[in-house]
Image (cartoon, rainbow, N blue to C red; front, side):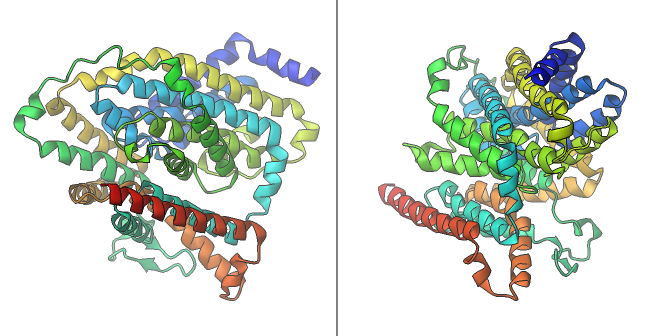
Length: 495
């Protein structure tokens, strides 16, 4: 308790609070700009942190981490362009709310859900760091494959009324995920002798293409009068998120936060998978699942709670085992080591003060995010007041620059344009986009885990059924699939 109070006293100083605030602001700005990922934000701040005292540096990093996870929702809601991969699911309902003139309400729900998810993720990190790390160590290739299979089963929940079109979209996403180097043999697949495709299709190019650019093409297909019509004035009442509306999402936010934190614990899975899984689960449990994708608050609360909860979960293997779960935590490991802190099991025995310092920094980052985000929302929401004819060229430039900035490669921008045309064609023919995106996200991990498992078992599928965790996940996938097929058939019959 004395160590905890000492760490808390350190973080209640002005320099540390300013460091957290600066990290949150940089994170929100970076997260809201396509191409500037959370990992890039923290990487840009890393050289600065080396010249700061350790508590200030930790506060700066944690603030940037939480801020960038929320920042991605701003562009996702306002211009249908996910600023980060974790915000892709937010576009499904967030942008539809903005089209209804409720951008402020959508942004507030995203902010409050993000802060709630960040808080719950921190609590899970504080209470269950060691037990969760033990469970994570038991995940091998069979367990990862079964988890990805469960995620694919959940896709049927966001495939709309036509299960066939949803499956076609999902298979197309899996096909796109196979572009690049074979993960086992090292040979090139579907690259058409183009060296730029050797690393596969870039996630940001896929997301921005099928979400943002396809929507721009849809808008351009409208009449000239619609493009130059003044935007409807924003209704103050429509843009106010009431406490009742937020409170109605409490179970949704809690469940999504737990999903996000648990998936965050598993190395290599990523926030985008957590967000789509939580979105699909929210739709499955909803009383009106048919309204998802049309602009409802449930569809914003679920992915935003999940992506900020991922931050707390991702720190579990980092602190307890010294194993970074993703690119962001890998950079954080470098920052901690540069300050003389070595993450791992001994850290909880020899340097418990630093552990508490990280816990407190993550918690205060959520508090500062709430304050900074609340002040900035009215400014962000003003974007939708612009005419479409003015906004569309600006968004197109952002899309091109964002995809180029990711690797400084113009080929990524060209890929984004091709995928945007594909997304436009799919939308015109009423194919759902979400199954394509989530199957693309998990496709590489799914294939890698499947092939590793088969090699370990001498190509026997029994390895998936003889391991308890894998078996439970596969049974869960089958149950979800049957439930979703029956529900989709019922919706189709009612149409």
